[in-house]
Length: 355
Image (cartoon, rainbow, N blue to C red):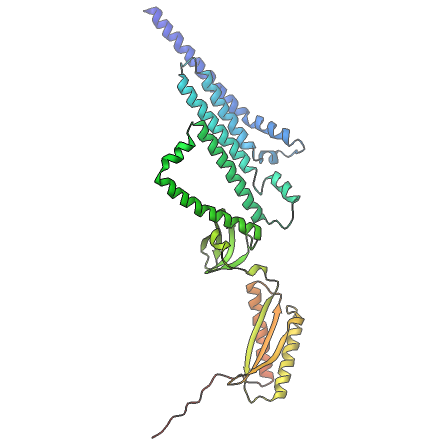
């Protein structure tokens, strides 16, 4: 009886020692994960002496996480014999380790395809400067999606799931997924059309059908527009690619136009002087293009003489355009008063028949 008790005590002490060693392995890998990750990144960025930039690398955290996962896996392998872990359980642990490794690597690879990545910055500096950040970011999102899709297929393969059987087993659900995929494909193609045609970029003020506002983001499925009411609208890319788009941000100049109806009995000499003064006023304004100024006797209306005043201003954005328009209107009103010219109003004479 004493021999059995001693054997159990001895066996338990061995297990405890093995557990302590396994915990030590995990702690060791955790402590040195930062150092090993730093050294591995430094090997590929040997020219970089900035430790902060090395730690900001897309693969720094994934490598660190992988090393910690590896430490846990090695600790479990070490405990297999002492704890009599079955092969089925170990196979499951190995699959979990492989899946976590694949996902960690995919995350690091995907994060290396961002606008902030040093590799992408270097690639973009060697490309055509006409390639906008928003369009370039769209391509990077597509690349990241492909990386995660490939990683997903590898994970499914590790789990031993038959894709053909899975798709066949969907039945009616497969038809629904197909319809959803068609809609997704349309939006993706629409996004590619936006990228190729470049009708707008992030930050542009656009108008499409009943939506108008500033583009905040362009994704695979939709384009996010911040309206002037400060609401956020997600417009499907398929709708945008098949609609007419007005990009107000692409305006090089904005037109000022007004029509003044002068009283019909205004002397022609006054009319000519008024036109001349309006032209002089517009030519003196720095924001007005001189070659675009038009001040003409447009037509004889039912209630007066229509004077067309038109010109282009370099005040493109709407607030500055309104300010310039207001100043011109003030000047016109001042000239009208100085020349003692009255505007005509739409009037009608009604004859009443008396019995």
